[in-house]
Image (cartoon, rainbow, N blue to C red; front, side):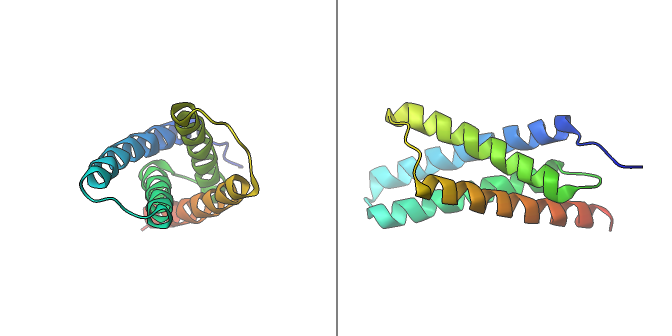
Length: 123
């Protein structure tokens, strides 16, 4: 019997990812106030924060079958919501090839994390 996506767990994963993202962003903002960093380093750290948030949300709440799909959904919704939030704060909404690349990387990371989450649960 084919299992349907448990949207409740996906939503919980997205919410956890957003919470971790908020916390890590505040910590990073404090660090930036104390030690100015280059734009390239800031971008790299921001991408690492996004990746960590996707992994945490996916590993914490993805269960059952189709982990790749559930993890991808967590990553996609987290990426969309965080993009909207940070774009609203920054005052700009621009879709570029970099944003699309970030979405693809997030989907891949979410899918791999979902596969790991499902397989780690079995043990």
